[in-house]
Length: 543
Ligand SMILES: [Fe+2]
Image: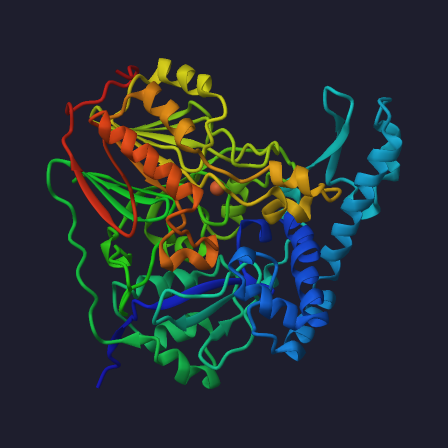
């Protein structure tokens, strides 16, 4: 009898790891990885080993949510010690690289006094030589940029740090992933394969197309000992069949947080993929993998924050996406790693970097990158873009977490794009301080006051309304609030009715409704259908 074909169960998590920590974009680019190993991972592990009970207490304190505390209830200290030891030995090169960055920062601070920088090149730490260019800003402050693409070709980009954990989830709850590493668990299978491994694509395809287990076992190199656990990740039960949209309208489906799927009968566009699982009871109704098309024409990434670039969602989609569009940067700045380079280096072949006000035109639709202001702690981060999607005359504007600090920017944009039909705006207006995300990259610790004044905050009501006044949309949706239970592990957000982002967004929704604008704060799932305005979009005109 021939071997039966099986499907991957819908609640199997393909969890990407870096040194046993949840992999996010700053752990891929070598320079940010080096600084995060030292300034985040080692620091949290050392802290836990010296005071596990303090961590256990802090995790229970809602005010400390998302802080640098391990969620192991004070236990597992010997295993954390092992992980620390393994990190110190296996990552010795990147740890030295991080120290060299500190030394270079110090060199520039003490010796670059406005005179020519050429004389300082011999003093650049040996391991950074040839990987950096020194420069002054216009205020005569010295800094450096990396030749980031060369770092990916060097020994500092080591794919051995990457692995995949496979496990079955039966609920939406997980510890905050930036502070708690994954230790060995009996119900988790860890595969030491890099993110560009073709087996990940073959495994993900089995969500829809059944395959013999011997085939996938061979590609992934499953050993005899792993075989039994691996087999229970599969089922003969076929998943629900995806119903392709065949109507003549534009269908918008909200998948949670900033993830929105736009479909017509001809095209599909998925913004900031964050796809939840199914196959178990969830408190909140939601679309999930079974609601995604068999092929996706465009995936749009708005900015390089861990809740908008999720490898856990992107790796399983890789095989079915024709084009990934990401914001362009090639600044080489430590705080602004290049997303296109990063995706290329983890096996994504079809990545397009889009500039501000640049348009990609295809059949009857167009995607334009628009400036994204704020929410990056006033760092010079360029890897961020809003998107205007125009389909047959109908315009949807995705602003992600932009904080509208200067409405005139959007007046200038409106002068080019004219009004829009639907606006999606993130209003997480009490974001984390700078140090939460960028702390490990800074040359020195900011004072508490400075840190607190430079937040990763989205727009409040007044700032959001300035956009409504400028673009006069017919519909306004607040999204990207990090509220859905299946993304608490990455957003660390749990609001109450009194939380400022809820108060502010309620206010905005209320004002919009008073003005006759359809408005709500999205949560869980939502489906809307829009009429196309005209069948052909003019290539050179916006209106
Ligand atoms: Fe963000």
